[in-house]
Image 1 (cartoon, rainbow, N blue to C red):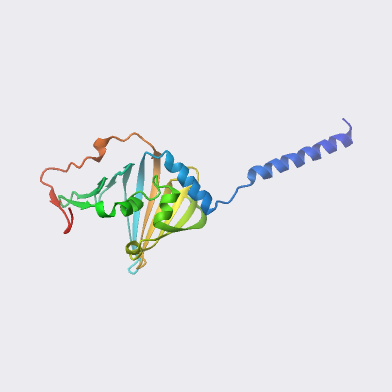
Image 2: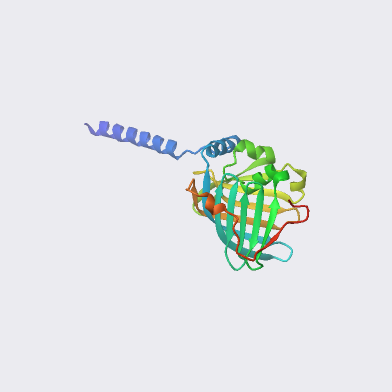
Amino acid sequence: MTRFSKCVFVCALTAVLGFVASVRGQTHAPTLDSVLGHLDESAKDFHSLSANMERTTVTVVVNDRSTQDGTLLVRGDKMLLQMNPPDSRTILRNGDTIYIYTPGLHRVEEINLSKNRDLADEFLRLGFGTSGKELQKGFEIKLAGENKIGDKNDVELDLTPRDAGVSSQFSKIQLWLDQSTWLPDQQQLTETGGDYLTIRYTKMVKNPPISDNQFKSHWPKGTEHVKPQGGQ
């Protein structure tokens, strides 16, 4: 190969490699339709989930911030949230009933969801097996862009509740979805007064084996059982 031929070959190869690199480096920015489509697909094979969580409550007026961690299990219409000390608490959802057990008070509160089950499903499973179509029924959705949550590439959705009762309590809900799994890394619920709750999820596992026994409503002997006025 002559020097001229070698030069042409090198230039051509460089151009080809540069083109391939540029194509590989191209990413298509997500659209709202594409994100909702991914949620639809992810919901099809969603059965259960386990995760660690960190919950931060912020009271804006007095600039108070409190953080608590715990674990979460979800399977179908069942959910078990275990909050760790110092404010230990167990929140169990089994079908139409939510139990809130406070060991320090030796008390469990039972709340019936039958009249508001659809609404409860939207909140208690927000981003966990909820399809894009289901999300659109309960919220007006805006795509806020892409963000990094830890080392993950997330897309942020801003949700405005359609239900008047819910919107009177929460002005906005933000949802950060991991673009590799389309499960939530973080949620933020902002009250109409400006206070907000941020929930961060880590060590998330999709479709782990979870038995019915983990959702049994067994409380220690001597626990006071309370139903709110109007509860069933």
